[in-house]
Image (cartoon, rainbow, N blue to C red; front, side, top):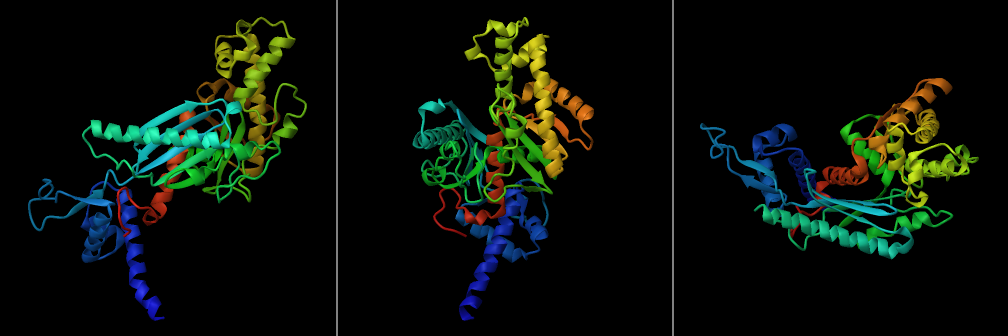
Length: 414
């Protein structure tokens, strides 16, 4: 009992410090009075907590209200703000053939970014981790160099990110693990980043990160983000909560085994980008339909060329887009029927050109299925949707429990 009583003031102070720091993370400059109004704490308590947070490296005191020209009468109000260099977060899209990395400050402002393409046939699990680590280090150094060049603060060279979130094309459970799969693809994609990257690390499914990014831009309590490049994958938010499942498999598109069972030109989980390429090659091989796509080497043909040809009126390419519309409508019906989502955002590299496919899919829904139909929309985040979702998740984790993280250069906790 005595120990519990002695610990209670420390616990209460930590709770109050966390609440004040969450307020600072969501605010610009603020006065003690503004913090008092939000928290309900006394002036003395707020000033004491601010002093602790300044000493710990989270906050800095700025010019008081009189010096700042905000008031000329009475006692000048003390003003505080989150330190710009309190720390950085890092988002990583560790895809099958491409890595993207973004470093951002605790406001979400992007400080630096980097990108690297890889040949998945020439890199193993250890190689993936090594390359991601190198790219993260390069991006962090670029952020520091940019800060120095602009004459601003520079993050300590030895400081690790407060949190790094890595998106992988595999189901991921709450502990960052992926289940076994027949071809070991998931094991290779989820390569053990938690053990080999500096600082706190969270591994998450790429489609889950995509839906978090889309939700941050267009909040909806019932929505899905459908990654549709080389593979299909869905991140789903229902009743305002991200769905995960026991093994992280919510949103995996294994039902496509049934839809694609009789299609010789498609793999079960091929996304719209892969389908556009494969279906076009199949039609070019089997038919004599004139097409500008015949000018390309089949081994070099990609989805962008198919979409561009369709936009120019190429008959064969237009037929491919209609088939893509049918496939998308089938997927949309399954997602809506099982999860009752209102909106499905089509995300990934094909999103900028997906408009005609969305039109065909809506026509199929109205002709062949019964309402209600989900709204189908194209993402505006392009290829950065996953890495931006990683930043969103990192920032939300820090806002939830900021005192679980030490600011850059800190030598003690609050």
